[in-house]
Length: 365
Ligand code: MRU
Image 1 (cartoon, rainbow, N blue to C red):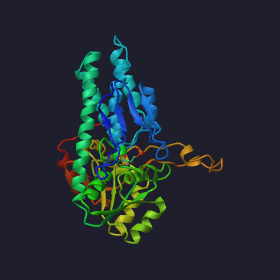
Image 2: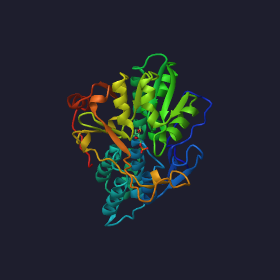
Image 3: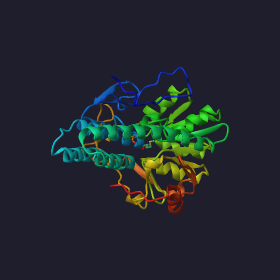
Image 4: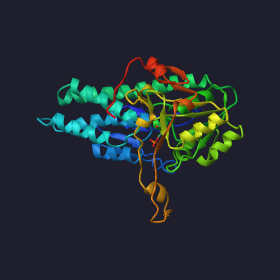
């Protein structure tokens, strides 16, 4: 029996489209659209144990901060399902959660969702009741993420004028969340309202999430999109061709500094220089008040292969090293506004963030 918990990079803009599930819970199996293969192949992988799910997260078969968190939440269900009941049940479960936590360090959603699942586990002793409660909690996260993306879409689109041209970076769309995305939720909503003219998508080196995923998602939705090399973005802004830069985030520190895909910070600098609004769109699960500012955010370093062998050919001389950070931090001072499901926070800083979130939230990392 196939369960109906699934995430669709669906699109309201084109009613003829067949939705393609990004993530589906199928009775003990988390089926993931393999984002490493897009756009040339639409294939799925099945994760029935923690090692295969951890590998899928590490290698970006599933990626994007909210999607990683939700996949890990279903991972907690898999952890309980694949652990024998008995004396060591609790210990073995926690060891599996630790494996999931070790997959990617920057997106706080991973730690946030797993923290919730640890709490649910403690509150529901016994294997069967733990499994049931963990599954309900993962499905809840999926539902709230979808609702959050709708809200953020509406708040963000309110900031755009008719005929807007938007630049985005990486993929912050349906593929990266359980809904329409964060930055792309704004873009979908603006398109529906008829106020969006076109989108520019940075290709996003080295893994090309912009070219492979954002351009794929937007094209499926019938939204005009042009892909540009990351290094061309500043020139595009200089030419006055863009009305707003809209990006997602992997972690927002207590003072409003925002980590996102490498290449976001230079975009924010160029946007400031040319007087173009720079918006960060992120759900509350991306905020981390236990990290005071951006310098405290751990930036994932990824392997040599991503730079050396993006295709068949090796590109680097053997003796050359690599510096391959997956993310950078944009200081709050360069952010025009942060858009979340609660509203729009202009000129974000520590005081306004604390007011918005109400109370401190602590995460493990
Ligand atoms: O390395 P990735 O592809 O997981 O990085 C994703 C991003 O940087 C996204 O912009 C971010 O997670 C926001 S997604 C709604």
